[in-house]
Image (cartoon, rainbow, N blue to C red; front, side, top):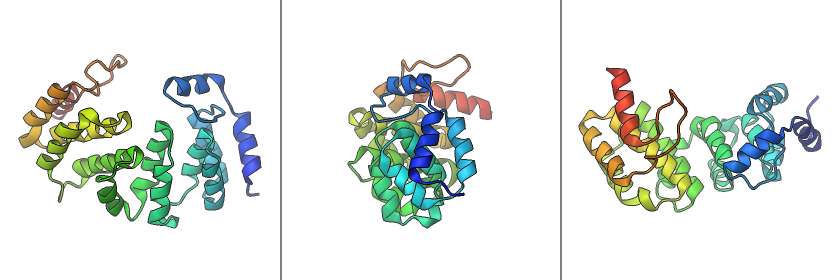
Length: 223
């Protein structure tokens, strides 16, 4: 049987975990949440399957876990471009933004139109998504992308950008250096000049998000 909003919220609450809540709060979460592990959210989504009305209701609740679940219940083709834009702008937590981009935005038929729009947008969440889509283009579909122009923007805008936007701008910076040998030296130089994520803590065996280190490591692996 299909689940309604209250039944779904009750199910999510029963799966809550204090440690997950605490970790999200360390990462800046201030919204209502139950602290459901991502694996448990995926399992619940697999049971419910695609359900756009329920997804919309879960999204409007504002609860972090409900929004993460909502993302997995959406068939992107069922959403109008304006609906995707509205959802992206209503995000309040990075983890939700990243799931929304990965599972809905990147699979939406109008994602290129949205990318172009968001790349000129002052809204931090729209800009974050725009730069993330641009990073995908750099890596997978570079025709029509001008790396030199992007590097100009990164060099002039990244230092003063919102932290949420800096992250995906940095992904673009690293992507340009990794996938464009002719622009690699400049990408590394910009990363060194800006110094963003230079001292970012990383676990042993993980690659630093500091662009010069990231670029050099990925190029080394490809050699």
